[in-house]
Structure formats: structure tokens, C-alpha cells
Length: 301
View 1 (tube, rainbow, N blue to C red):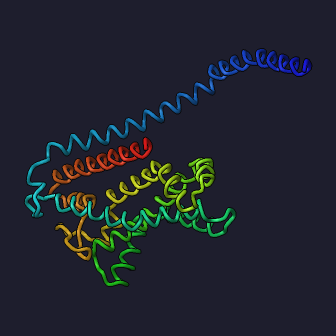
View 2: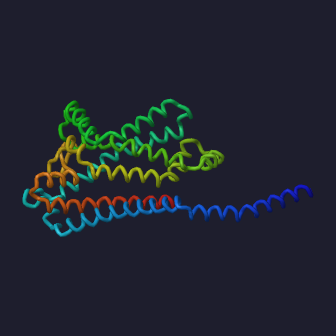
View 3: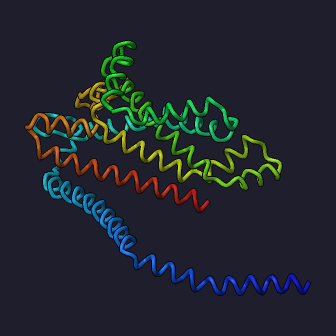
């Protein structure tokens, strides 16, 4: 017993001696030129990122807000009013249709990869490589694929349904990978505690793991929505550029991004294009704010 007490005291003395030495090392590291250089580089990178964002937002607001007028929100598009309301409605429709297809497939795929697939399964590696490859494909390639597959092979032509399915394929890897990371971030103690209380695998996944991972899942969905709202190339080849509200999934219709591109490309309504950019910016910010609010609710629950 006495020997153990001596060992404890000797250990405490070593820690007491080394503690000031460690603090001095930290101070010396902070004072070193290389550490100062790294701190300056990181600070400059953060400042440049924020400055670019503020510049873009300020430019869009300054150029677009003065051009907002009531005629831009008329239900029928004409060459005189260049109304953006039909494109806004089509954007909401396109987003909902794409998410209805991509979100369940992406989430269930991630659940299988994380919770059900055995470790070392070759299929898991193939799926992950495929998802990463799909994430790096340019949007114009997706547009050509959607046009040839849905428009030509299926005979749908330019349709909202073809555009929605093309966008669902585009955002599917993003939702699947972010959901997978969110599920893996849930501690194993949650699973063990649920199993210890007698819950089965399915109940554990849907009652314990998914609610805990919901903020991360919503982050992936937010990124997917942003890609849908801001996409132009893929939708120009699939959903078309008709400036009317699509009343049927097989109708052609343009989204806000395509509408803005067409206005700038024609060169006849640049002021309306700037105003459309403001509406598009507000739409994205509103979607992000709503998703963040929902994520906080899930976190508190």
C-alpha cells in the first residue's frame, strides 16, 4: 500500500514538473513565425470567403431590388411583363417531385450501407465508389442523359417529369452520402442501449438512430434543394423552357434559374433577370432557414 502511494505521488510530481513545460511549449509554438504565418493564411481565407459572399449578395440586391415590380408576379407570362411567377411555381413543383424520388431512395440506401450491410462487404465499396463518381459528373452530361433516356427513349419529350427524374439522379449521391455520414456519427451506445431494452433492429433504426441523425440528413437535403433550384443545363435539355405553369407532369416548364438564363440570353429584359435573381436568392435563403429551424427542433427533441 505504501509503495502504491509513493508511485502515485511520484506520478503527480512528474505531471507538476511537465505541466509548465507543456505550457511553455504551447507559448513558443504560438510565437513561432510559421504558426503566425498559418494563422494569417487561415484568417485571410475566411475573410475572402465572407467578402465574396457579401459582394455577391450585395450586387444581386443592388441590381435587382430596384427592378422589382408588380407585373413580374402576374400569373401569365408575356414578353411585356416578363413575369417570373410561372417559373417560381414550376421551381417549387420541380423541387417537390425530385425530392419525392431522391430522398426515400437516398435515405434507405444509406440505412442499408450503415446498419444492415456486413463490414467488408464488396457491394458497399462498389456503391460508395459509384456515388462518388456520380457526384463528379457535370450537369450537362446529366441533361444529355435525361434528354436521350426520358425524352427520346421514353417518348416524353420536354417534360417536368423527365426533368424531375434527372434532378433526382443528380442529387441522389449527395443525399445518400450525407445521410450515411450522419448515421455513422450516431454513437454505438445508442444502438446498444436500444437493443438492451429489447427493441428490434427496425425499431432502433427508425426510433433512435434516424431522429439522432436528422440534422445531418436535413443538411444533405438542403444541399440537394439548392442544386435543384440553381440548376440550368440539365433542365434545359429535359424540362424545356416553356414560360407557363406546368399543370401536368408531362408538360414542359422552366424553373427560375432557366427563366433568368433565358432573359439574359435574349438580352431584352435584363432588368427582369436581375429581379429574378433577387427572388431566387430569397427563395434559397428561406429554404435554408426553414430547414435549419426543423433541424433544431429535431435536435431538441
